[in-house]
Image (tube, rainbow, N blue to C red; front, side, top):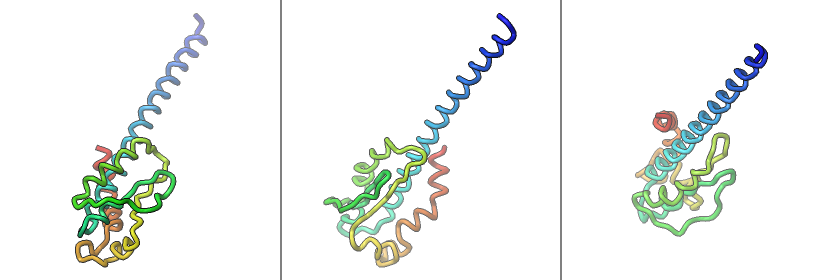
Length: 139
């Protein structure tokens, strides 16, 4: 075997190592994306004011497109909504656009202080804490 052949083989091994590293890094990044998105969903849901639970039950996730319509669900503690929507995140990956939406007509009013239970809204409060959610997901 010549010196050139050895160098080529070493280069091929290095290339495979780089590819394996890139694949593992991508998988970890996708996991952080999913955990961050789940944290955002859970925070928005639990920050939502609750009377009958209809508003909490109407949070929906969409990947690449915004969900339309409403959901016939009441969820006072929010766990049912997170359980229903959370599995959608299994296919989310780095670079995807994710929508967290509540299409009830009074959602905008609730976001901007209509409820004494959530005078600062749900989405704005969650976005203010997104760095903490991301840090937790990255751990």
